Length: 532
Image (cartoon, rainbow, N blue to C red; front, side, top):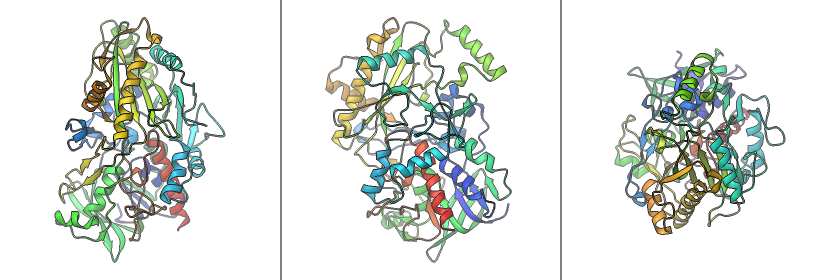
């Protein structure tokens, strides 16, 4: 390949794929995408029912772990992040969730991010969407990212909806519409019974263009800087290091962990911390790696008496064998349906103007991150807290780019987060005991005592809570003293360098972060093209 391009994009995740498509579309600029992972060719990526085996597959996963969390009984938490074309959009649960439009108004009003209002975000969401089930005024048709409502639903998911009705929750067929509150099925990024990742939607069609180069297995060591301007990156491919030069811009799209990591390795970040690791300070930027936010999640789980659920058992074996054969020979059937089906938005006792709890119902016995395959039948209900007040940070382990960044989310540092998460576990446990599941419900196995006291529930929550995979804000946009990027995603104080991914979000949105990351890249591409 050539070593000189107009744009060099580091990372082929959700944001990088969008940028590669947009910046190469008119054919006037040459674009290079450098991805540390490999190609997205594995069958578990394509098959919705095999979701469990993407999250735990080390060949397509960075396999991160946090530091021991003092407020979670000193546990280290597993943080899977995608390491392949499509990034985390190739290993996630495929849920299409935008967050509330008020979240983006807050970006503008509270953080000084002009150009990021709810209406501007909505226009970008719609422009790239092809929604099979919903249309105007909230959804787009004809865009590259295919979105559909999960179907058919397992009968237990329909029972979950009835359990929500018993709690007087409103029915909401579109959580990406006028409001979030209420229950209904998830929308997912799927097409023709297969995952529709950002690589499928944006990158692969663009790879037919002669002005786009995509390199896999490319580990970036640092950004090259000359006189306050980014000129390229030092990258290792097949054991050899080389410099890839950018005539116009270097764009970091490695995600909320890898983008701040690469900045620090490049001498861009908190000066004293960089010196501790023997890194020459090129640009003192204290906010790099700070302001980390994530959605913490807790699960309730119950065993069921019938083989209605998705699961492994002798009673289910004939149906499972049929489903496998149907999928192998026709590419259709149960294996094309996402197992994570039931959505909901509700309020904790500390909620503000928006619902602050997101419900995720699975008609199966789920284990944390799918790392354990359970036998038998049951149902699981996850609930996460959408607007945490706790803030974490990233720091370097060493100056070696092969060493993972040190991750400290600092979960439950704020008392309101503890209250909301305990409310979440209490709500999840109560819903699974609803009369809507009569004839199916057998007994709880998480929490062990479903009628536990409030203090017992809090203790159980601290012992089992896990990430819902939504880290953001470690290179936050804005005008404050810890802002790393300006509202056009340019790294403050440097030329020719942007960060475009979830790390620039000044605050985590109220929902899954894949669709918002695609929106961020869509808006950023507009800004980059307008500046040419």
